[in-house]
Length: 148
Image 1: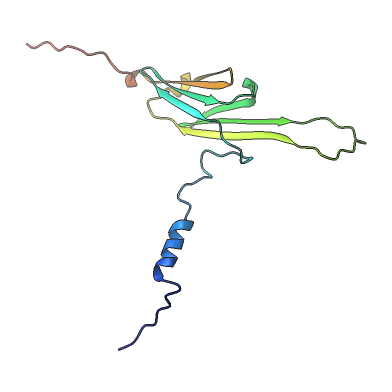
Image 2: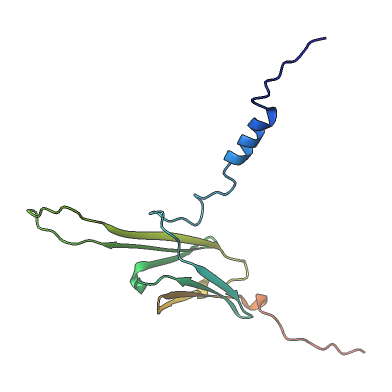
């Protein structure tokens, strides 16, 4: 009979636990990211009878700072804002901070959305994107059926 010697300082479960804890379960590179590691704008999504509505809190931006596109059922909202101050060639500054903000949020649209009729507006720091539903997806009124 062969004896197996175990080293209790490194139990077998340790490797399994390390593998579990070190695994990145969420694909952070796929959809919602900020290029500058800043917080992403908060989003509210509301579903009504006629449409979905996406509200994004993005104060301090202008409507021209946003880029909204739809491609293959993915709604992508992004923004890039740079503030650069002009300095003369002979200027000597002891401190200069760059101002650069960028984000990108993506949402998979349900098949019930009519992507040709999507509209957006920016007002009081809130970007609102209206996603109208297709006619066949809208709730229909109750229909009474006559009995013959």
